[in-house]
Structures are given as structure tokens and as C-alpha cells.
Length: 451
Image 1 (cartoon, helix red, strand yellow):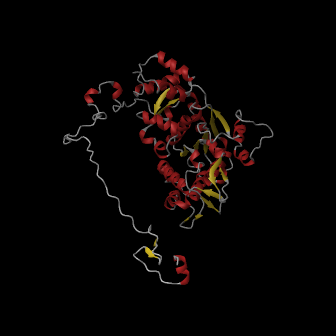
Image 2 (tube, rainbow, N blue to C red):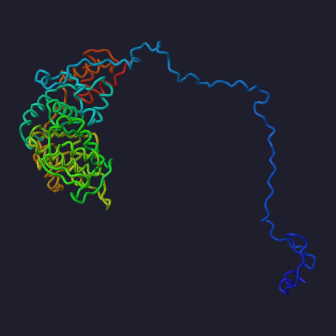
Image 3 (cartoon, one colour):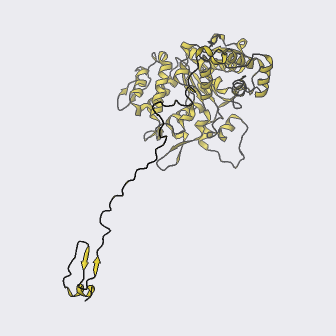
């Protein structure tokens, strides 16, 4: 009888051992044995011994030992290694009484105790790089500088609607330096100054934002709080004597009329989510007071007229004028809101090609369009309104020979140039740069290293 038949009839099958079945016919059937644990393989140690017979007690030193060890100071006698011995520039101070037509083409240093805007508000990137190399912040007074400061003197007693200037010109012609000189001049003349050196940071989605249903705009609380802190650091002595002319019923604390203006600013510094509303209220109070003129200076001015990189809940790009702070700045720039005394200054920047000057602003300033500008090209009505009344203030594309010579002397005295001073090298670099200020310094002077 076969094994299969035995299974079908139900007869017992004798097992011979674990894992085996014995059939009546004497056929041994093995069961599944692969589930049993495998025996570990024996490890055979290698008999190969590297470096047999060698004494490793003395370790050999690295081949490059001493490659990165600094040389002794006594061996660094060449002047090129004396970078730490920076020479303090001996320049006349940038003072309002010294800025006259006779001061044109002269280099002047900003006073240390009155350079609050440089430390509090910050600087544009290109100016910051220059000041990191120089021993003290300074600039060359140009003829256009004298003209701008004369316009500020005229604007000190009139509404800001009459003085809304935008500095235009080729890249690197000195628009940012001119704006910084105007801010420094205003601070020394006891102007309340609000300086925004990098307006691109307002629209490039680099700070948190939240929607305000009351104003139907998007606020930037972190940026607004930082701007309030910088504002009070620069203008703290002037704002001590000012009081509010309106009452502001905030949830955390109500600000009554005739309250010190500092109390309003402190509210924004204490509660970050209220900072955008406090900043808007602060500008409203500055617009009404007549004790001090107000200067609003904005670099990267064209960024306020571009579409921001912020997104709404439907992931659509938010217009810059739908952000609380940019919208407020645009209202003062367009004359919809004005300071009783003061001026609004802006400077165009072409370094960041993401935020180009839009067609609406180009046509308002009377510039030559860089893109098609026919009658069938769409203009945004809101931007056209915000660009009305802006005055084009062109900055010369080239430095005069005297202005370039002053810049050359400043960098030479700062030991930034490793070349001998002479008329030949000066005229060569001035010609190579075509008189452009940025090209003359960065690609002309700072790239001349003689070995």
C-alpha cells in the first residue's frame, strides 16, 4: 500500500524519527527541513600580517606638518602684510555748514557721534562693502550733492507734496551714496528721518506676514517692529517733545490724544502683532506735526511698484500695494498723504533684475523704456496713480576728474591700493571705467594688485 493510499484510508503511519515519515513499504519520506536554524559558518582568521617585523612604536609625522602654521611676525616685513595697521583717514567732517559749492569734489567723513542712520537703519550692500574696507565711513561731495541738499533746505518749510524726488541714472553712478548723504544731512539739520536702505526686503517674502481684516491688507509685524526700534534709536531726542493729536484705541492699551508720542512707539515695541498698525499711526502723527521737518528716504524704490513674492491663501502673488507698509510708503510717494513739512526721496536700483522698474514708473519719470511700451501694452491703474507727481532727479553718469581724484586719494590713503600713486595709473583706471563711480572703485582700483 502506498503512502498516499494510507493517508486516504486513515491508517497510522509510524514515524521513524523527527523530520521523517516511514511508510509501510519501507519508504522514508523527509518532511520540510529548511525551517531549521542554519549553523553559523566557522570564521577562518587570515594568516596575513601587514608590516610584519616592523616597529610601529614610533609613528611617522604627517608629511604636511607645518603647512598651515603661521609665519613669525618678524618675517612679515612687506607692507602688503600690514593689513591690521589701518591708517585712520584724516578727512574734514561732513557738516551742513561745510556743504557749499566750494566743497564740491572733496572727500568728507561722517561724524562718528552723529552717524546714527548708518548703525541703526543699515546700509545698501555696495556701500557696506566699501565701508568694511575703509577705516571710517566717508563720501565725496559732488555737485549733484550740493543741488540735492539745496532742495532739502527749500523743502524744510513746505509740504512734502512739493518735493518728491527719485534719483535716476545708470547703474553705479552713485544714487545710493547721494541718498545716504541726504539722510545724513537731514539728521544733522534736526529732521525726523526714516531711512529704508533695502526696500526689496519689503516684497521678497523674507519676513513673516499676516492678514489684517480691518485694513484688508497684509501686515509684516516683525519688520515693522524692527523699523520702529531703529526709528526711535535715530530720532529719540526729537520725538520726546512730540505728542499725539489723535486717540488710538488698541486692544492692549489705549493711546489718548495729547499723549507722548513715545508711548505709541513703545506699544509697537511691546506687542509685535500691533507693530504694523502702530507704524502707520506713527507716520500719521508725523504728517500732522509741524515742529520738525520729516525726511522719508527709500532705496530700491522701484521694488514698491513690483509684484511681491508673498502669496495669498489661494497661492496668488500679492501686489506690493496690498502690503500695509509698502502701501503706506506709496501713499506718501504719490502725494495721497503728505507731511506738513518735509520731503520724500527715492533711488532706483538696477542690480537686482527680479525687481525692474515697471513701465508705469518709467513713464511717470520720463525715462526711456527698456521694454515694449506701445499703446497696447497694459498699464496697471493702481501703479499709475501711485506714480503721479514724482519728479525725476538725474544723477550724472560720470564722475568729474576732480571727483575721481578725491576717490583715488581716499583709497590710496587707506592702503587699499598696492600700486604707486601717480597720474598715469589714475588716468588709466578712470578711462577704463568710463567715469562710472562703481566701476572706477571696484573694477578699477580694488583689482590693481602689484606683486
